[in-house]
Length: 412
Image 1 (spheres, rainbow, N blue to C red):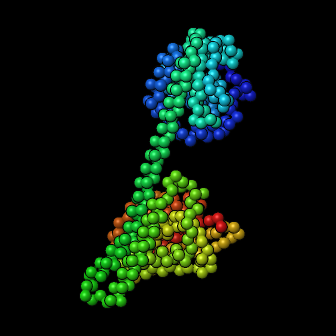
Image 2 (cartoon, rainbow, N blue to C red):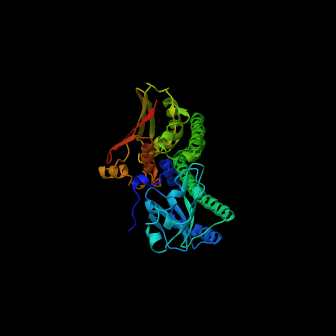
Image 3 (spheres, rainbow, N blue to C red):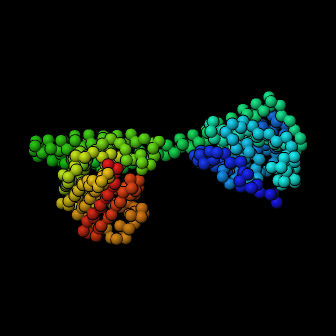
């Protein structure tokens, strides 16, 4: 067995925590990397004239060999590795051990005393910047060996190429994540504007069916609803499409953004969803608590949350029913709390269905007029409320309607 180095003698970089974080940000698949690095480990051995070459990444516990030439190796404990010395200091550009058998740090290691009986080591840190090295490119040989300065320079070029490929892997992963995020936003956009647009279509259909029986005053009211609602749909689409993908769903980023007030929010909700409600013969009431109604707050996600819930209530409320929305803001010390309540006189749900929704397991069902859903409206609401550190509660009885309450804290 190898004699483990004393923990205090292990060469730990002074910025080790930051180095490990940098390695973690690459989120590398060590097995997958072998396919893209094997040509470089082989080339390094050929240039150096050694029998063995390794490309190693080093985390807190383990040295991971993401590519090897001349030896079959995938990992070893960090404290037994030579490459830990190669990355131990920021100003190290190379680390060479001419004779491992004569060095007390390594002469008791299995790989020196037994097969492959290594004697020579030369390593170059894989630096992603001036501060951090993710690991090392190393060449080794069971015989005494020398490498010229010209060949060392060529090995440095290979090390730089390894780093460039690692960065390329990271960039590709980030781009793929952004593509997925764009698809998610596209689906969200299609879902969120479907309800309002169907409302405009419904109003136009009413006008077409009534034909000459339409009163001019009634026509003007319909056209006014369509015009105001169209502007609000454009605003909603713009809110969704202009989200900064680089910020992801970080709650700290979601709380910042262009200001909104409850007064403005109430107007937007009426413009967006009264046409949809009227098409079904449903009355939509938006009630505003005047206290703090003009205090601005970030609008991120609020329209999407309420829009999904209102559309859902309209979907499950029959003709002659009512959907009520209450908007309120509390200010407690340095914190704003937005309280929203959406209630309807619709078909309601049993407790089993409520529990499924709150657990993110609800599936799409048809509305009172057979309206189709895509199954992720309420799941999206749960996700958005959770991302804002909010709370959601649902009260419902089969045949008696549903009441949903949401509370979202926002720094004042």
